[in-house]
Image (cartoon, rainbow, N blue to C red; front, side):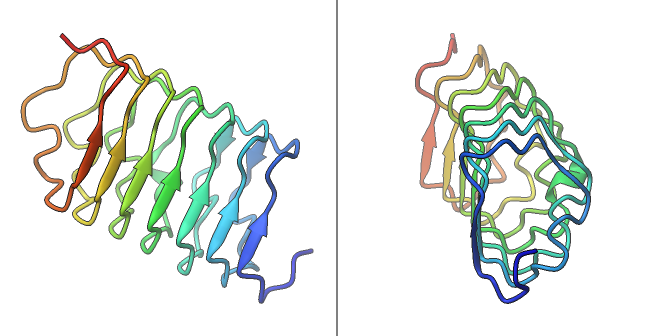
Length: 161
């Protein structure tokens, strides 16, 4: 196993297909977890629970198509979440519910066609939101109104009319 004192764990470019519940529970000191370019299709509820020191999580270039509220449990202090180049189609209104400290969210190049009104409501610290190259066609008024710290909102390469 990985030593409990590990702060950076790079598991990118492997063949991981699922993140089981509490798989990292013995690695509570992790600050950076890199899981990009695997074959991840899903994250079990609580897959990242007990990771209170995690600051950066990279899940880009995988096959994730859905995220539930359980995805974000335990990630209260996460600052950067990379989810670009996955297969996300719609965002559960509570999948980012526990990400109070998130500053950068990258959802570039997915298949997102709709954003729920409350998808980003808990992210008062969010500074950058990247939604370019998705399939958004419209945005409801007030979708991003809770994002009081937002500095960058990238919606390029969508089908917004």
